[in-house]
Length: 225
Length: 78
Image 1 (cartoon, one colour):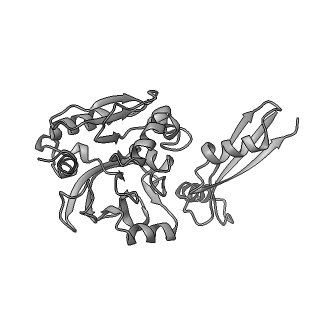
Image 2 (image 1 turned 90 degrees about the vertical axis):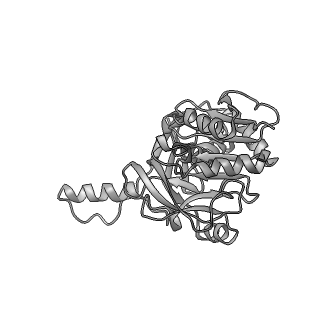
Image 3 (image 1 turned 45 degrees about the vertical axis):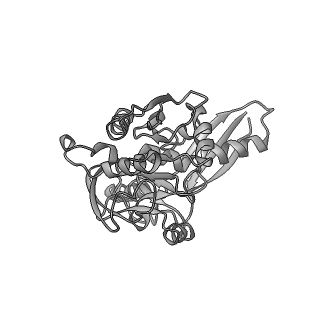
């Protein structure tokens, strides 16, 4: 059974090809490429990815304009029906701006753009996206962002932690994120947003493979094998 | 009619930009500044038919992220 996925491209997305490449290499099927102005998604999708980049030039707030683009209404509806949605970097910012994930991503505490490999700790290994990792596993995945400082009020943070919705935590100081949160899940577990870029480390030629298990988990969980 | 929407970070939300600006002010040799918070101001030119409720909608649904920001709307008298 083939894996039907879609990668959404906004004006200013720049990791959409990497995301499409990772999905194709891991699943064996090329994803649909969907433009932000499209009103509808292809039918019967197993997986939707919102890639990194600088949609709309980060105008107003990172992800703010993209979250209100026509295709996002379809993405929100699909997420509500349980279709898995992965947002990486700018994609994570879009998911918070669209209200699919709690909290907000603010300017890095150190002001500077951070672009390097970082150590992460896998906190949740029960989700569709993280089942391929082991509990507490430390992995190395690159980040490249200016606005990755995760913020939510204390009550929300307590709830995320209590419900096991923190998927990944930074294992070193990166951007000032509340409780070192690098990736969070929605309540239903079918939406994951994360600042680090798993699609950039799926094969040895990229200098690392720690991101591959995320895509393998999703493919295995959704279409088997 | 001109409308200004002032966007500011909520109390308790750390403002790294404000802190950096504060630091730079001290670099000018000016002391006595206790705190700096950076925000933004968005100016709109609107028809008289645009209602307060519509301005509220624009401000709360798009111009601010109410998780982290507050806004204040000001109609500028001509």
